[in-house]
Image 1 (tube, rainbow, N blue to C red):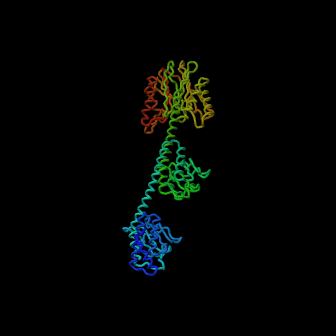
Image 2 (cartoon, rainbow, N blue to C red):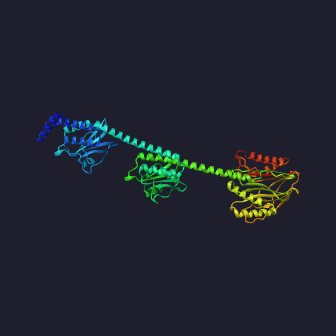
Image 3 (tube, helix red, strand yellow):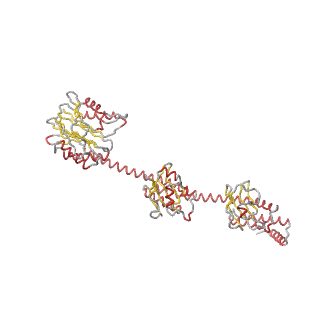
Length: 583
């Protein structure tokens, strides 16, 4: 409430004005009263809309203008209307322009003049623009004289501090709001991060991500896509009716990262298949699940209530959630692969144990002969095979085979060959036995699978070996008498490729001291670090050098020579060798 003396001055001034007179002293007193009212009004708050509106009424009453507006600076030459009285509907909400004058000025053609302002007074402090006060024409079209301009200068001086304080408070309020949003988002990210890290199921992670996104943004729908060979494949969707979320979006990782380098509104995406698909399905935001140049998927977010846009804080939250989701999905995938590898390792270990059980546990004792054999897989399981099969009349069947390929498929075929020969060896002459085996393999294996096999029947009493070589590495027979080398070639093609094969048998006599070595190509084709093969000549020289020793010693010497040749290069194929020495 005004002081009594001020009220008396105001009453006297009003009486003089009704009589058409306005003494200068009373007018000056009126201006001081208005400035006091303005200062008290502005000082009562920190720039609220009601306070600014009340301050405008004080100014309008003192200057007797029909309209007024206060535009507060937002930075970069931009002013937004914060309080107004008597403005037409077409009056601007925002003013642009960094070149506005520093002193009160009459606006030229433009938005200010179109809004009916006769005078615009900038409010500044220390050269910093704070606001613009726009005033309409005075009653009776009286001009703004020197006294009115002096009042405005005083008004600007009184209003500068409160308006600056209001701007500072508004900035603080915005910072507090932003911090509150950040704290809320951090709490959300912490909670969802804890749940994501606890889950190792990719489907559960996808559900958690879509649910979190919809709850945080109040979005109408959400879908998570995983990157595959042909592009993005829908992994999980919520809120989208059947068929609205496209099941697949074509594109490779590099192209999709260029189209979506970070969280973007669909309207801001680079033109392409991704933008077209998201816009068609009415998704408003795309969030890449990426770390650096590695893209694993995309989260598509639907529209928000009322079509509200996504602010910068929303994009930051989406980017952080995308990184968390990508890390969780990669962790789940790594865990799935680890479990799968452990399962495969267990299966391979079982297969290896089964395969090892097919080899003879001991070498047979044969009158007049020594035998030794060894098979070593290059991988967990292999396709090489050797066996000793007791036959009628004290005879002994000798088998060494090499199945095409490596690993589990080769080992399974090797097991079939083992079972068949164990059942059928000795039921007919060697060529007929292997011809039947060929028909069995042709009918029960893939077209690309085949077996090279050497099969011999040793008659110790006659010291003779009847054999068939079906496409195998020809065995080495080193004669004791002259050190000569004989290769056992009689036989025919490999087994399993042709429906019918014709095989012939060979027959050799083994004299005391003679040495027979049957090997697979893992011996002859073993490669040195330089890529050179061990070859037939090195096999022959090693056998000749050790022929006077026992069969086990010859075997170990041959294997050691191959290993020394391969060196750091390691194995490239399964290695099997069978040594038969006549004593």
